Image (cartoon, rainbow, N blue to C red; front, top):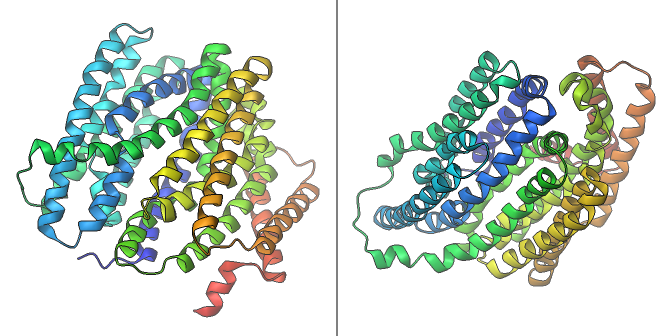
Length: 469
């Protein structure tokens, strides 16, 4: 049942990530122009608060559950038993968190928005995507997400037109999230049977789940506290500028991060069978570096022409912010790759947790010091420092405990190729108006130059792969 290939799983995940890139190309301009910087800021500020409750509700199950199911997936009884243990575990923490959240909502400003977002907390109760990740049924997850996201997209296009539609936007996002989580239950009978479990068996997962939870706490604080601090110390408009800048950078790296999603169960299963994984790891990580370095320089190349027509004239300020965030993309993708393809499958949770904890501390301290003085620029520096710390600590763990080695010459060649492609775009399109055609032309030129130049200097993994076919 589970003879799924990395390529097919990556295809399903990557196709969904492509959708997550394509849809915002239509929705982000609509939302940004309708809600404005302050509306975008309010949504992201409230969402950052809600994320803390979602964190407690999930209690690290998203990664821990995938790993545990992957290990027992070939035995139906053990698979079923593990599912019910983890689901009752999830039900307890999600239910308790929901009660606390509702109490919090009634005593908060913007209580209506928080109550609407309570649907997101309810969604964690029904979230069993970790199970389907563990059995590597990414096709089902992808189809579900496609349908829900397309419905959400249509609702945004039809219903979001002005600042007064902020509540509707909150409702669309919350309902789509809830429906997405509930829809997987239709197919669960194919994989499991009802197996009674004891409270002791459910409770037995607490210690291991907490290991993942510690990292999730640090990462959630790290990713969301910046928006929270910006909202407290500056204004909702500044939060809006920062959020849209970050959204563009994160969207750009979402396709390559799809590989990390499919690699957790595959690497866990290979580790369980004592198979060598370092060769796979070297290939996937260097391919990701090839793509993320290219993407980072591509963003810098097109950002000036992209912002005015994509986000609207109210967001011109972020033309200065986006290029400063691009190094974060490389560090973020690399640290995620090491975690998903090595630390989690090898159960090296101490190194996993320490890296996130120190990264979060570095980011939070930087934000507290820099945001009051430099505002949004302080936030950019803070989040970049955090990802750098996480990345370097995980690299250190990987290199010390395996024979994995980075090909520094290839990485240097990727960087030089990115710089050359950037300047080629800059001089060939200098003075052109900010239009979608200009941006498309710049993107095409950049990718073409980057691909050709990396081929010429013999460091293009795409062409190497095609040669071997």
